[in-house]
Amino acid sequence: MARDYYEVLGVQKNASEDDIKKAYRRLAMKHHPDRNPDDKNAEVKFKEAKEAYEVLTDAQKRAAYDQFGHAGVDPGMGAGGFGGAAGAGNFGDVFGDIFGDIFGGGGHRGGGSQVFRGSDLRFSLKLDLEQAVKGTEVKIKVPTLVQCKTCKGDGAKPGTRATSCDTCGGHGQVRMQQGFFSIQQTCPRCQGSGKVVTDPCPDCHGQGRTEHTKTLSVKVPAGVDDGDQIRLAGEGEAGERGGPAGDLYVQVALKKHPIFKRDENDLYCEMPVSFAVAAIGGQLEVPTLEGRATIKVPAGTQSEKMFRLRGKGVRNVRSGHVGDLYCRVSVETPVNLTREQKAKLEEFNALLRDSGSRHSPREQSWLTKIKGFFNA
Image 1 (cartoon, rainbow, N blue to C red):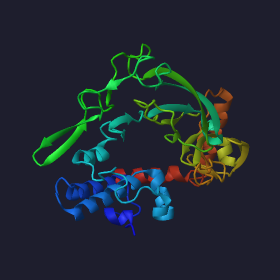
Image 2: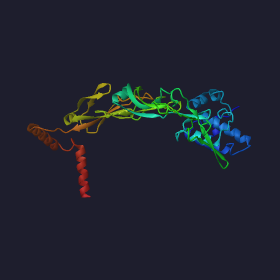
Image 3: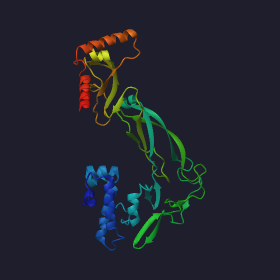
Image 4: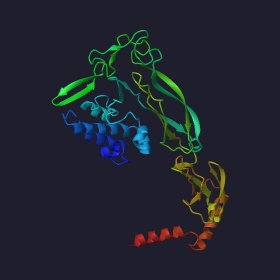
């Protein structure tokens, strides 16, 4: 019975891809047949580690394995099934498997030659707050590299064919011996393709890809926030030598809104209130993303007072939780007063002074602190 892949690599079931790669590299270097000649046990452990690594670093295979165990992955992937006939591969493969994505490998070996997955692309999509909250569908134009229609990605002029590389014999790899290490590297002449184009395609100049601007439709789900990404699989750059295309990541960037500020699921706005309404109370009409709402302002309301409207925020795109709307009071001082208005205010201010400090408790508290500061 095949061993559990997580047990083989010595990692937990919730291990990250980086943890899996580190565990595999450690085991591969320890048990590789080039370092353990004539050790059948080491060869078996190397094959187990390689098999476990190639399943657990493939998101689709890992999901199937987590749900159904060994029965959920390709039945042809038995012990040694990943390594071809020899099963053990070579020491260069260990580093190629682990670091290929980082250093631009991303290659897929097939018959010795390599094809390369296209690069992922990123596109910044600017949205209004209303679009992000309610969801929308937008058209975007993305400059990218697509497979050449003339040569079908081969790079050779129609009617001709690429020839086998005489440096690597068509394998796409050359082997170098350094002490007891046998290191396999990408062929410097054909760059791993195993073929050389002697009569290049006139449209792509032998590259197999041409520049093109694609128009794509992006469905934006309701509730996305600034910095969220929408992945469009296979809409990145075309792969080299017939390799699969990369993905396009559309990153949401919210435009500044004239009224609201968003903080995750909650919305905030500032509500100017005249000092008369703040003093005697009243009702104010405030905007929400769903229409208008009314807030009752109690008498004696001070600046910075926060009013909360439950459920008037944003519905979270993942959890479905709806946030709140917070309205902060900003008591406004009147400007451009007439002579009559100024006289009335002076009369009003005199009435306040005559009645003591009970109408302005914050002012009196502040004056008391200042008196204590200077008398200290």
